[in-house]
Length: 203
Length: 211
View 1 (tube, chains in turn yellow, green):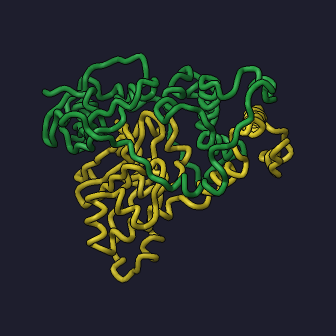
View 2: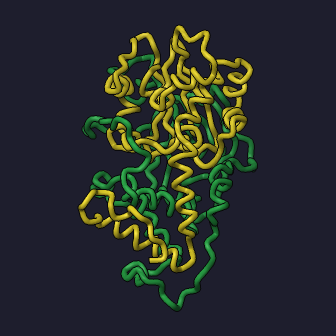
View 3: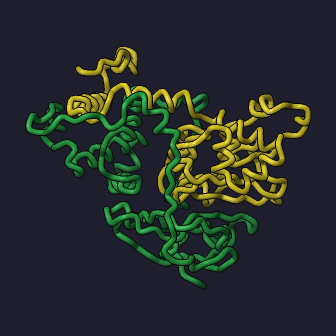
């Protein structure tokens, strides 16, 4: 094998590798043999999505928006540029829009057509976000979805659902929790959850 | 599948890892690094061509792998014999990977854009009432079934964006104005849902007509 990855065959303890694992490995070997992909580049891509992007990036954006009114104004006017100010950019974040929760409005993001998700600020989506139950229900029963995640939304709060049908990606800016006036951006960022930035939870 | 019933509970997984198996890592990376000669819309369409029962049964990365394999075949990047044997056909040239490891971080953090120079003024302005056309295309589209024939309000114009219905089929980018259109939940789902709730979608001009 041109590319020997320790651990490839050991995802399931002592079980033999699954059919799909073998087929993926065969395709990778073929593409490497043909000179079409560099296995070290594949490693670097995996490392990027496991370690360089993730919801901590989005949490920095939210914390700064809570702390800095001028940044918040820039974020609401041009989220792509404001997010890039913090060093977050790339595929699936080319056209960002920030949507802000208020006492009167709660925002929820979904992609009913596939699994569109703002990778540079949230990383790769969780399995449930890509699943048929979420994709089907978020638009018709957003309050039921929120309840399943443990949030009963008051009837006087309007729900705004954003179905990511184009290349625009949405980031929910949760409401800043009460009693956090003295906290700096690092401490605020620690309060921000991935689910809060998708909109399936309130902070 | 927006608005369909009966798909079951959402079931979030506590402390979910980014990938659940090594092969998922490799599929994700292969989709990004492989020279498929397709584009993002063609890739989405390829996944939509998976038969419905299989689509619902397969995991996300199984679908990605199936679509990647198809696109490599269709682009003549690999041939069926190579896929079957896993061995490169000696008659095909050996090339140099287009993406080297040291280029990855820069490539992944580079923001391209799907916006293109507009060839005509947008037909609609924020505040305009529009109806999503009742279209039933057989190819790729980003007009969800659940808004077809429904009326909403234009909230925002994003300029002209690459039009997936053409781009997915190798017919060029054909940029068209893209709008965020807001629909009242009751317009889509009837009187049983809360009056103040709404759903916004990003829809290209050919999907819309003036009310």
